[in-house]
Image 1 (spheres, rainbow, N blue to C red):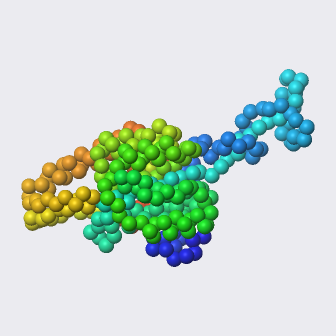
Image 2: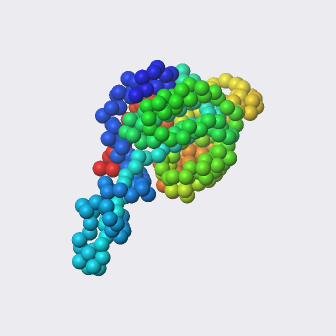
Image 3: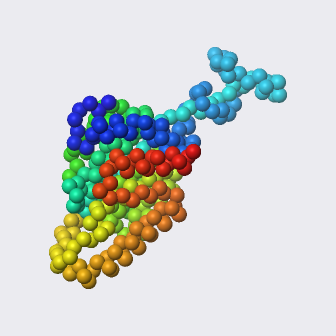
Length: 299
């Protein structure tokens, strides 16, 4: 699977997570109890209901107890398990095109997307990709074949930073378009109004999806490590602002802390898994730690 060389897929990092395969499966099964049940009936997993016997039905599923109680002929129907459907929503807005440690938030998100998609596809889970800023820029519906994974990696190669972010416009549209409930994994810096972000994320929960948010920030966005007058440029609007850090560092950190606390609290209240990270943390280590933490919860 995925033999071609791609910029954002590093086989050696994927190999290092090989032993976590079952942990990844435990993660999604623990989150989405019952979502692997299919409306298509068979005889492989869990009893669903009875139906009247028809000539040619497999007698192994004939219900003799029902015959004794009702004097009628019934067979048992079962529900089959199907693979999980996952949607990775990758923020490609202008603010993601920022980085001070050799990798931008967008590049980090691409690496994280590729590795997560690989893990899920390897387990035969269906995974798709949506790239968005103020609108949907690219949409690859979920599938799990090696050819599909190659297409997903190829799409990551083509990504270019967009402009402004609008969670409201894109997520509400996506929530209505995603028919079958599954796993929604958001990779973003979440730079939008917190109320709009949460309203959009709750729409997925309202549609019965499980939601995981990887909140990706650059270390400089947390620390604001400047000591002289500097000009900030908004990567989404182009607006320029010259500031003296001694007047803005403390208010900035208070505002940012309040923003992060609000997101974490609101996600927790909405049963949304929230994971904050920076581009300083290797993306494979982030995923390893996260899966390990889920394993402990599910044990």
